[in-house]
Length: 77
Image (cartoon, rainbow, N blue to C red; front, side, top):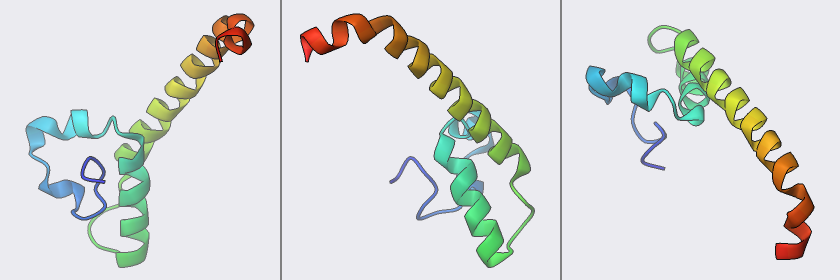
């Protein structure tokens, strides 16, 4: 919960760590909901784009990893 901006806005994160912070896929989603509900600040377009990109990369790599491990997965579990 502390790694995502649930309790605090993303603007409180130091500017040097904004790029690292934006890699969390939930940052764009939560900031988008905060913007839509509170209409505070500017829309988090870049954060949403980074979140969607990271989510897509994780989805593709997870699918590739599963395809590779699928044959031995049932034997191990």
